[in-house]
Structure formats: structure tokens, C-alpha cells
Image 1 (spheres, rainbow, N blue to C red):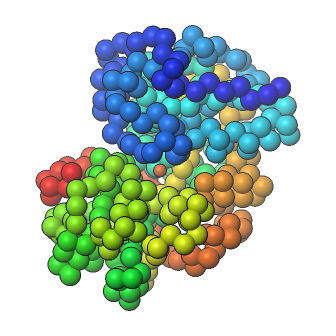
Image 2 (cartoon, rainbow, N blue to C red):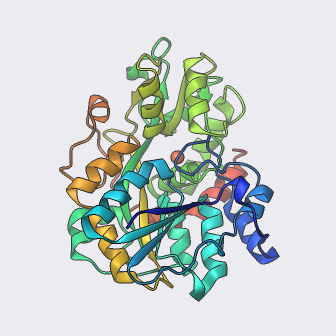
Image 3 (cartoon, rainbow, N blue to C red):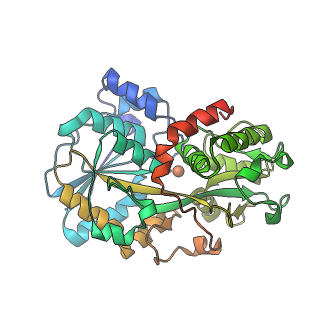
Amino acid sequence: MSLKTISTNFTSTKRILPVAVFGMMLGLAGCSEPAATEDTAAEESVETETAESSEAEATTDAGAETVTIYSSRNEQLIKPLLDRYTEETGVAIELVTDKTGPLMARLEAEGQNTPADMLLTVDAGNLWQASQQGLLQPVTSSILETNVPAKYRDPQGHWTGLSLRARTIFYDPNKVSADDLSTYADLADPKWKGKLCLRTSKKVYNQSLVASMIDHLGEERTEEVVRGWVDNLATDVFGDDTSMLEAIAAGQCEVGIANSYYYGRVLEENPDFPVGIFWANQGTTGTHVNVSGAGVVANSDNPDGTLQLMEWLSSDDAQGIYASADKEFPVKEGVDKSEMLSSWGPFEQDDINVQTFGELQTQAIQLMDKAGYK
Ligand code: FE
């Protein structure tokens, strides 16, 4: 048996989703990343996504022996790992890839008829959102409880983290000394006026970061910080982290905030990339860490098989591959990091339960809007 892949791309447009679904997509869209990143290559307008997103006719319910995954993670990234699972267990896997918003809209629209068994996506904010919409079912697993620290799992068991990414500070070492850097909040200091670059506040990664700051600093102080960031911007906000890192390299700004794996990808292409990584908030709350993760779909007809796959993804073997494939950190403690990640040195992670990012998401979005962060 082999892995069957169904990717919702622009060329496979066949049907238009109902208006109600389109409305849900509008609410969930807004993530934009360059092609060939984890949120799949479908990065164009919402309208285009709508036209391309219904593949129900291509995806038949494959039954209890198959696990069907709705994934916002890049196919190249996870396919080798899933192939290995199929080899080891004989369990067939169907993979449907798209952006998170359309996948969730589709799960909602398909309801009980969904062929999906697992939702695989990035950011605790997204996983929380899926759980809030009733798209995931709670599971209990002593294996997940052993392998995945509690702070990276939903306390109610609707989803679990499977890899970690740090959202931290990057800088131009020609103009900035690491000694000048300390916390996310410090980037609001007037000393960084005209020197800061940020990605748009529309991206869930920044919503989760600001949610964590609300939890740690309170709403009032966080708003002050976000206003300070906006005052310090060197240029308009960026659509993705990679462009932001390149702007630092090009001398357009001196400091910025990005996810660690984007830096890892750039370094792999260009080991001399002239940007430094700094672990934020050491000695205070720790560096902001988020997850990629998965949950069992509420209407799955194979919840046991799906849970077994999730458990396998949390095992030592799978963790090493899954995390290193995209320059992420394993979620399981004691699994070796890649050489590149080890070279960045150890750091204290924020201890917050990542579910908080979802709980405070609306508050974070409103706060950023009020503070003028586009
Ligand atoms: Fe990303």
C-alpha cells in the first residue's frame, strides 16, 4: 500500500464551495507565506482558494484501515515520514494538503461525511481554533502524555504538539551587538527607532506571540509595547518571515522577529547569511515557543488508527525526522536536534501552556489593531 496524495492546487479547480463556506474562509485566511513553505504553496487570494478548495469528489472515504490527513504542512516535508509509517505498519495514508483556513472550512462543511481522520497544522492558535469549532475529538493517550510535555498539548486532549519552533529576535551583527538585545518588549524602546522590521499582525504567529505577552505583562503594558514597535518600524510590515530576515541582511533594518526554521532554511541555502539569532527573554519569561501539531477529527471513522499514527509521530525515531526536516525542534525531550539547531545554543523556553495563545487570540488581534500594528 502506498501513500496517496491529493493536493488542492490551482490547477485542480472543479467546484465552487457554497457561500457559507466562503464566509468561513474569509475569517480564517490571512496567512501568507512564500511558496514551498509549511502552509503549502497555495498562497494567493482568498477568492482563488475558494475556487480550488473543494476536492470532495476526489477524496472518497477510504475506510477504517486508512488514515486520511488534512494537512497544512508541506507535502515534501511529511510524505517521507508517512511513507515510512505505511512501510512499518501496512496502514495506508491519504494526504490532502491546503492552507489551514480552507481545510477547517472544509471539515466544517463536510460534517459527518468527512473522509478526514487527522488535522495536521501549525500554531497552537490554529489548533485551538479547530477545537473551539468542534472539529476535533478529545483523546487520552499515555504515550502522548509521556512523549509530549503537557505545555505543548491541549489539556482536554483535542490536539497535541508534534514539533517546536521558536519565535525570537534576529539582528544585523554589523550594527548591533547581542549585548544590546534582551526582550521582545525592549524592541519598543526608542533606541530602536527606525531600525525594527516586523511581519504583519495578520499572521497567527504574531497573534500567538502577542497573546503570550498579554498573559505575561498584562494588556495595558502589552499595548504600550506594541505601540512602541509600530513607532520603531523601519518600513511597512512584511508578508512573511523570510522577507523580513532578508531585509535585515540587506541593511533595511537592524532587528526583527521571526520563526527559527525560516532562519534555518535561509542558512542552509547560504551559510554566510549575515544575520544573527538571539534568544529573547532569557532570564525573564523565556523565548516564545509554538508548536506544529495534530488532532483526531471529530467525525473520523478511524479514531484509533489515527491516534496510533499520532503516537508514532511522537516517538523518538519519527521526532528526529519530523523536526529536522523543517529545521524545527523535537517536541519530545531527549531527541537529538540537528547540528544546525544545536549550533544556535541552548535557550530557556517560555513555560506557558500554548493553549493560552488560542484563548487570548481575539484579545491579541484587537490589541494590535488598536495599537496601529497592521
Ligand atoms: Fe511558517
